Length: 129
Image (cartoon, rainbow, N blue to C red; front, side, top):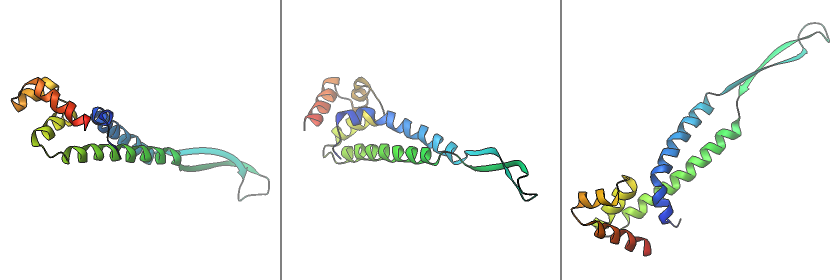
């Protein structure tokens, strides 16, 4: 998978979406539906009575949620691998601070004890490669 700047920028939102999906998947696991239908029972032929029918909810919904979560997890893992593959330690730290920790350029520069121009230049250089 080719990781783009957009993937980096959306990394934290994708993590949050995965947490939301985890909750929805958990709810889907607990979803149980009940309905009542009319039908003949064990008694005399054609004697209608109410029959309670129970089962699981929308199985396809859970499958869609799981697929979306797997897709997001793959992108997040690709972003993390892309950061880990960077040879330069300072650039790795800039990327992690900016996109994984969500720090601003100014906050990243302060933490690294460099200028904001240096942080900005490292980000631009990384995304041009």
